[in-house]
Length: 242
Image (cartoon, rainbow, N blue to C red; front, side, top):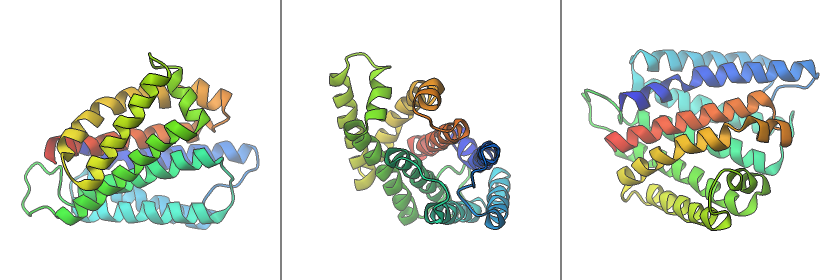
């Protein structure tokens, strides 16, 4: 449980670093960042502030909620800014993971993952966070059926080909149903905690596939890997303290 909290509370640090590297990568090509520069500084400052207080355990619930609001606002600003155009399925991968991270922060803000809980957890906030994780799982399952890039990424690393891919589709769908309904969440989180590291290692970690073959920006892919690690942290919290 403590390990999951460490991963999730430190996520904003990596997210800010990877964004800075991504925007530096774009500067060489004279492309603008997703977020307008004046707002970008305030956004990253707020993220680092919330992450620092969460990491030291100071008012963790409040600052986890603040980090969730900051991430939601920055995502909205970047989505509406229109500075960079992504492919449709890359947008699904990016924004679905952001939704899951926001859900994980809401789970942390509810009081889950605390070693010595002095106040009762907020079950409604935890349920909202679980729903957000369920939405992410629906997007993963949907992409396995409709995204050529995602399907090929899995088919290159799994045995059984199309049959195994369909089993993964069903499994992600069932896990999503569990998170959305609130039934057997701990069991679903334990199963997902086994699957996610393999997904991070073999699918997200295949930089040659995503960056070289499908032109996903290098630091954008590393940001997505960091998001997957943050989601894994949230899932570990639910698996141990659901």
